[in-house]
Image 1 (cartoon, rainbow, N blue to C red):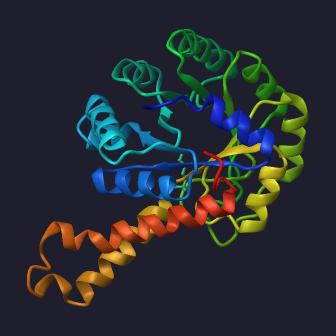
Image 2: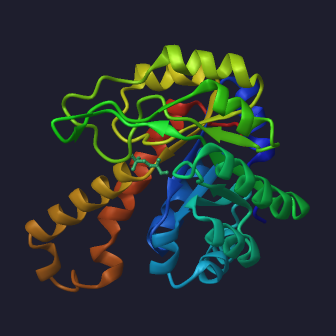
Length: 287
Ligand code: 13P
């Protein structure tokens, strides 16, 4: 049965580890993440962006697939199904479809509008026991047209959103989605420390987990990060393993064209990436 992220991230924050959010794209992705979490006795969060939800045939289809796998694969570790960067309408749609956790990303609105909309999402979600992640407005860093720094949140705005009763808060500290550019200046730990001081026990979320060096991940966890999102890294592992299979001509040998064979190396590659992250985040045996 799906659970909200509430309990797992409170435990993580207290225990000084983080729960991984791994974004899913299809059946293979979902199975790979669920089986790896189960094998490592770790709680896990399945992230679904609005685009991935459409790709998989609707939020209702995603809920059906995930619930079916939980039962069919006898998954007993805590699993949350979380909308990643949901819009205002999308958040209500995912709640209606049966998601157990929602990120309402109002960071592109002015702070007052972000607050009003976040409040409305919390009202509907809380009545159903669904956890809510909010994101705080940000200042981008750009040089020569290249984003080098990532977003940096204002701790006072973080406090205003945290006080609304969200379960977790995503605050920019120089992190960005996708592969980090060569001129990336790293995570801003002074800002993270300031935010943590301001919001107290609120679990913090680190987006853009792909490519952040291990020592920075560990330091972020020590400063209150209890949920870390990883998406691109699984895509890169999957693509590299699939590329190798094709380049080695394996699809041309025997029944190598069978999708169950063709997608197997990518599936194993996702499992290896998820295992590596679960170990780094410290959530092994925390189910
Ligand atoms: P990456 O794709 O950089 O791992 O970021 C994932 C993320 O933050 C999803 O919200």
